[in-house]
Image (cartoon, rainbow, N blue to C red; front, side, top):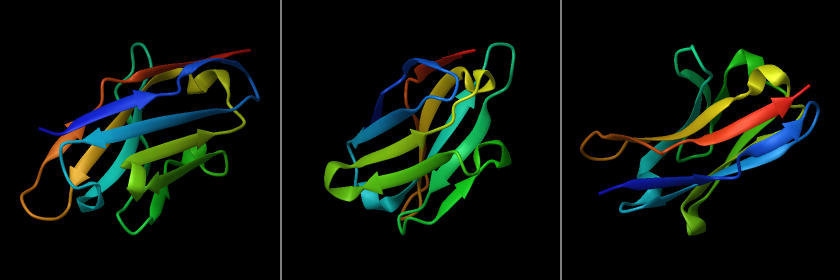
Length: 118
């Protein structure tokens, strides 16, 4: 059973930075494209960033130039470095894993709250 455990959320002032982490347990990390999504109150969950097993990244337009996704295979961890945070970035951030080798499968973390004050 794949488990994703996120950490690193918190309260920060506008313009500040946070780094989210998501650690996988229960499967081979390299077989997954990892992603980050977010959901603000009253809104649908939306894509933020993804990183393939070959570290090819993709970002939503609203975070380009501010957020950076990276992964560390030895620690089975994906990161989201968030700089230049804005109040509109306030949301619960979810880690996502999509298996790309073998049988398909997708998994979600429990979410971590990010709050940006103005």
